[in-house]
Image 1 (cartoon, rainbow, N blue to C red):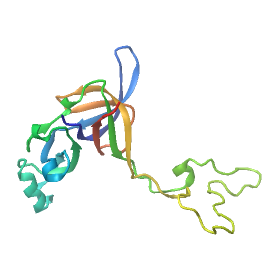
Image 2 (image 1 turned 135 degrees about the horizontal axis):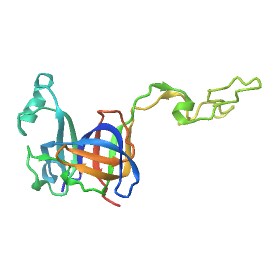
Image 3 (image 1 turned 45 degrees about the horizontal axis):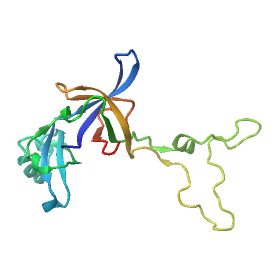
Length: 209
C-alpha cells in the first residue's frame, strides 16, 4: 500500500455537511502521480516510491533527468518526491497513482512550505506584545533588553529576535478528509494548510492514530 502522494494547494473554500454544519476546507489537486523509481531494501536500503508530479517543458529539463524520466514514459515532471511504501514489489515504474488510495473520513498529515514574509520584527514573527504606547514610552515594537550582564556577556543562542520569517517546512497533522473527487483528482481537507496557492504539498497517511 502506498502511504502518501504529492499534490498542489488550489485554495480554500467551504461546504455544508449533511447535518448542516459549515466546514472550511482546503482543496488539493492530488495526482495523478507517476512512479519514476521504485526503491527497495536490497538496492537502496529502504522501501519507498519516487513520484513525479506536475508537467515541465522538455526544453527546461536537464539531460540526466530526461534519461531518468524516459524509464517511466515520455513526460517530464516538475516535482519529485519520495513516499514510504509497505511492499515495493506491488508497484511498477510508470504506474499512475491518484486519490483513490485515500478514503473519506481518513486522517492525513500534510507537509508544505509556509508563506515567506521576509524580514520581520518580533511582534509579527514571535507575537510579542510590544511596549507601552503612552506616557513617554519609547519602546513600542522593539524586543527590549536582551543582554546578560557581566556574565556571559553575550546574547544566548535561541533568543527570539527580528529575522527571516516564513519559508519554512511545516507539517499539519491529523487533518480529516471531507470529500474526494477522483474524476478531478481533488481532495478536500478540513481546515487550513501551510503554503500559498499552487504550493506543492505532500499528503501522508497517519501511521499511528
